[in-house]
Amino acid sequence: MKRIYSIVLLILFACPGFAMVVPGLDLLKRVLDRFEFMPEYHMVGDVMAFANHKDIEYRRRYFIETNSDLEFVFFSYRGLIYSDWFLYMKTGMGRQDGAVIFDPRDVRYGITPSLEIRLKRANLRAGLEHFCFHDIDRNDGVTEYWNKEFLEVFSKNYRLGEYRRRLIGENSWAPGNRFSNNTRLGLYIKRAFGLLPEAVLGGGHNYRWELTQENRWAFFRSHDWMVNIKSLANANVRRDGRVLQTYVLGLEGHFRRGAGGSMLFLNYNLLDQLEVRPKDKLLEAGIRFYN
Image (cartoon, rainbow, N blue to C red; front, side, top):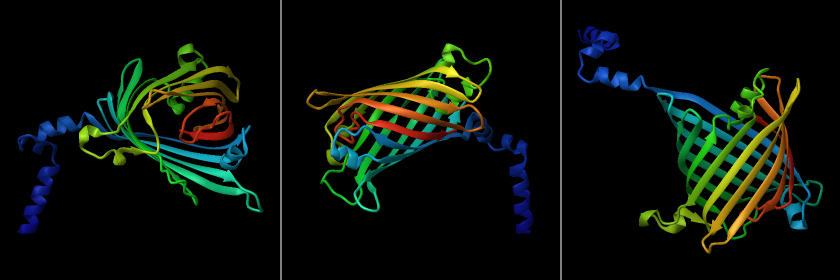
């Protein structure tokens, strides 16, 4: 008898009309219908080598670098609000003398929970960024890490996958598709209203806030290739008011064929005054994959 009773209850709960019987269940269903869970994800990975080292220390530190970025969208609400989580990992490979020239130097981890609002002409995102840098087989006595609040405004085609999709079509070479941009303002958290000690929130740097502008402009397209220039300008303001500047100019060549995105790229770090892993005057050449 108990088994029959359980089966009857299961059938009732599975029946769509049962939602009208239990108070509040129909309302809950209507609310959940406005959400979409795990609607999308985005991945970017690259490997690059360095050249134009300005001194011996740069030559030892910067040889090869790999980056893996993963973005999960856990849920969206009515196609307007998106819950984004970013995971970052970077490994830095140096150079050493001897038969084995590869010298693992450092690794960087990052996690960024955020909320994104997708408007008609642009997207807005606000969140919390956590990054930490760790040395490998060496210890300079300093571990750099921070928690940073940020707000950014970026074009609808800022993500690499969307940028490529809009430009590979035969009739898509419009200026609005060829240009993408991102403007970002960040504030390094130091006290959190006294709830947490400063040592928990950040260390190994003197940054207070930052402003970043990133642009892309596609200027060439053939049957197999699409080429754009890239620029990045960053200003980090220290606690004492000093402004640390970074400028990067790059060239990116995307393969037009295939379902996924891939590119060859070349970057030149015109100026990098950052105190954490600066790349001043370095050339970067590599390959990048994305979806």
